[in-house]
Length: 630
Image (cartoon, rainbow, N blue to C red; front, side, top):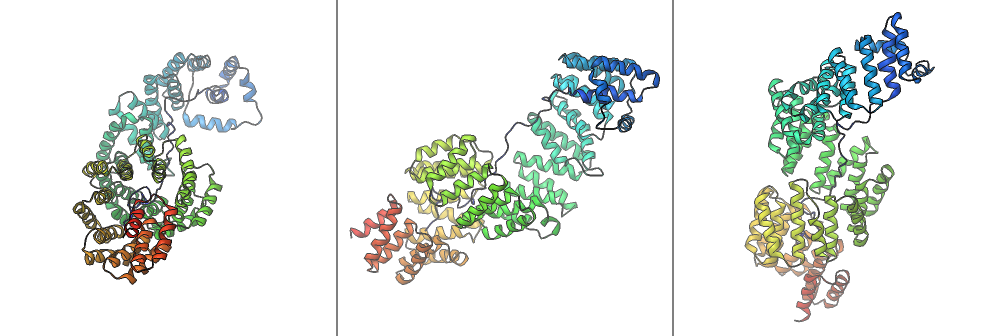
């Protein structure tokens, strides 16, 4: 029996559904800061703090000005539980080297009072004047904040230049300056703050964030300037003589654009100098996965180095990749090891949930769902797997209700795919197709899965020619996705084009000569549609050697032996297959063999039970009709 990519099993070539739900809330925008008028902080750092540094002759004047500003000033200054002692404040002030004259203090007061009165233009103007005059970091930062709040990007950019120059080791200053330069079309000047950010992120002590993360955060805040940012990264690469952090940033950016080869080359440059650089290994593996090259990705990820084995990102990606190819045994080993280190990690708990669902261990899956729910009861993936578990149990109504509830919150791709699968099983093909037309795909992999799902639904409504047209176009556009060939072979088989079926299956075997699904499918087609039984047995036997307990393979073994008139052997394989998976097609085969062997009562019993489960199954009904009318 072929495992059809259909409404009953859509994930045969692309693995089980592994949803990734992204927080689509808008990134914080540098131009949308909350009002920077925290009164106590203003008094403490802008008015009261400088008073501690003034000469005795000016202290009284300073406090009078402060009192004129607000009566809260003295009350706050003399508050017993100060956040910081005057000595600490004075030390900070010395570090900032702030020196305020009477004229400067006057401008500060004007700027702050203007801000309190919502006269943002005046406040921004006064602060920018002060920043230019004093070149002080704290004043320039304040000027930047107020100009941003006033939506005055030009003034904010000017103030941020002073701030970044005065505080070359302040990552926030370099971050905001880069954003402002990009927003004001001064992208050519971004090299300096990016260079500084690189030095900060690779300097002594714990960096605030990796340089690649710094770049990605800027892309989120200024998405329209990503090309300019990438160009600057290339300049920085030349300037820094292929610095590791720059290369990693370039690889990360290339991955986000789907430029897998560029990403891999940048990561490999790092690995050439440092073969065990964990981040580079992680990025290289992702570049292979982006091209659907699972074998190479697994080769990169399965490194036995202790350093790499302890890297969370590498190990979780390895576990997910094993899930993708339905290698549940090895995936379970990986997830078990990871859960020993991170027992409360929701993603690991959900990974184990999926493994148990796919292994048919539904009670165990429920326990993992319960454990994950204790960590994050409202997690959307948790809701999805509750639906998926119901779907696997044949509780389509429960599954569909869960999926549709999730889709009301967001048109999430994997949820829509599985909802369409359930609708297809309920023969609601038009509803399923309408649902798929309402969602958008994030990358080529999702687009391919969408096409496969649509093709399956077209087959369900006897529109195989439309499915074939869709797949032919997709194979030209996405030649690196072999699952499209698999699906086309299934459609061609229904159309009776056995030459195309054999051609596609044999092409797939060139990619992976020991692929169980393809060996079994090709062998079954040859056994069922031709008289090349010995050749069919050869393919199916290779699949059986690898998966002797797979119901589909057992069914194929039984069917090819039936074609070879080895009825006793056929009956043994088919009975075992039916016990493991009482599916209509297996029931049809088993009943046919029983009927031919003269056990008609047993055959009728098998067929009747199968019809009760799926009364509209075309293959089963045709089998029964063929033998009962003879």
